[in-house]
Length: 281
Image (cartoon, rainbow, N blue to C red):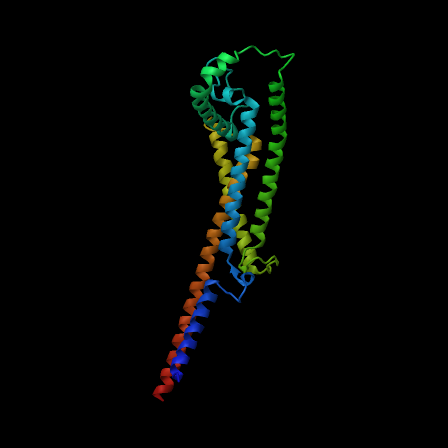
């Protein structure tokens, strides 16, 4: 027959483990939907997805620049008889498109010269293309280019919409919630304070970033097109502002937890003093 103090010890241990799980946010009632998802996990996931959308937009805009100018013309701009860069050939997308075009040309030459150049050129000699009567291959290439110039902007718009959805989700769910729950949180003073922190961080990052780009443009060190600034730089600044607001939220919760711990310690000290006084009586 087990001793009574052993069963009491096991009960206390289970209670302590349950309390620790609740404090850590790992509440489980037998199903995955009842687990608590902290705001840090929500914010981390949203920021990761928002950064991914910005990277996709940069890549798609770089492909548009490479198709507009041409990968070979972009790599050899102003060299080997190719035209020099035009007035609008600058910015983030143009630079990234030049880097992607350089990689493409390098890979193409590494594969073309040892495997195809020595026999394709002999079997199919290069003949000048007649602009008035283009070949079937040239017509197909023009059709693919026009199709890509339509599909790529549509893809950029889809990424912007996805980014806006994650941004709205970030401002809505600023507190812990049950995993998978779509219930809107309560608009408490703390939640509005967190949203204000994120808005403050976004305001700081966008203002500092705008001033920095203006100084760089005036010194002729870096130029960014207006469209690129709106759909690349501004989302990046928003991401940084949300991160800055998250740091402020973490510090606020840490300060509140410290105050609560000090208050609990004072209460325990008062209870201990009362017990000591009763024992002395």
